[in-house]
Image (cartoon, rainbow, N blue to C red; front, side):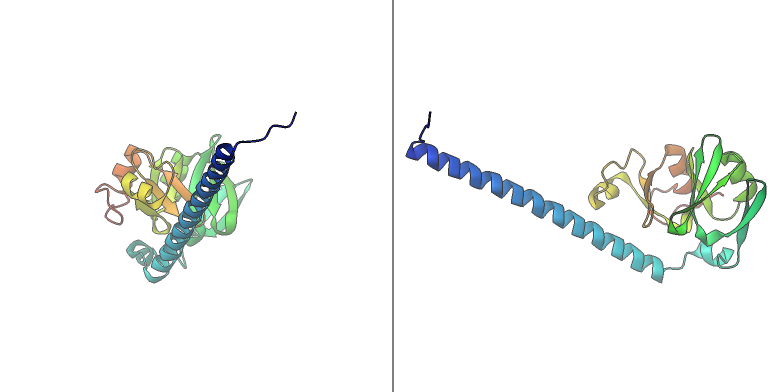
Length: 189
């Protein structure tokens, strides 16, 4: 059985097809503009990090400072500037380094914070994370939403160009960024 559409039905079908295609184009244009905005933000952050020498980094002289990560029976000297963040994992600690490298440590994160990283520019932003503060930028929840981050949490996020973002806890925000503004917090570590 072959049914023919009336002229009104044909027009309706054409209008619906055009509307669907227009909606698809708008969605795609919005997706592209979001991607370009995020790409522009990354480029801006990279330029700012290249131009801006952190006062903490200047006092610690990151180019020369190394720490030894105890693990698997031997110690691995690692330059401090290569450590992006430290994460707790199953009672051990994982050091996330630049270029997506990882080193495992048999110590728990509390012991790593207390014995290895105290006074070296690391800050505990969450019970599971220590960040190398000169390599991160803090955004309040409102700023993070404006920048396009999907779920900045209640207390904000810290962002690293290579590793993305980490939600911070209330205690982490109070410890690392007590005034709630980028660059105004003092790390106690």
